[in-house]
Length: 101
Image (cartoon, rainbow, N blue to C red; front, side, top):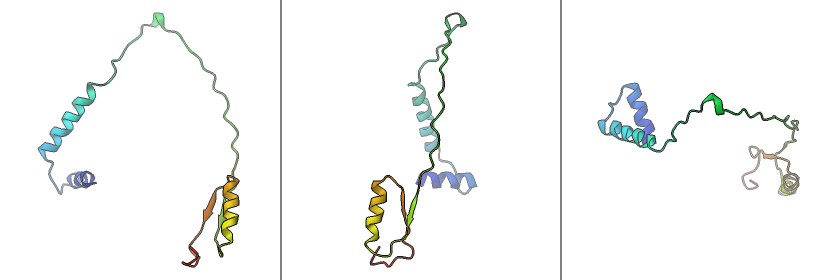
């Protein structure tokens, strides 16, 4: 995070760039280049064309979402049943007593 904050200060003109930082960045760029794959160009003579059929995607199935604001501990059983049935459960704890939450 300090690097991000420093970059923001430099961008706003509130701080100056340090030469050490620039040198590290240049070293990092040069080291990346060593491990890249070489580019191989193919002539048109040996080129084969491959065609791949794209199948239609499955139809979108709208899922049911269950929203609950529990008022008692017994509501947890309902939440568990919905969760076991692969139904997404959203639990709203805003209006719930802190002891119950």
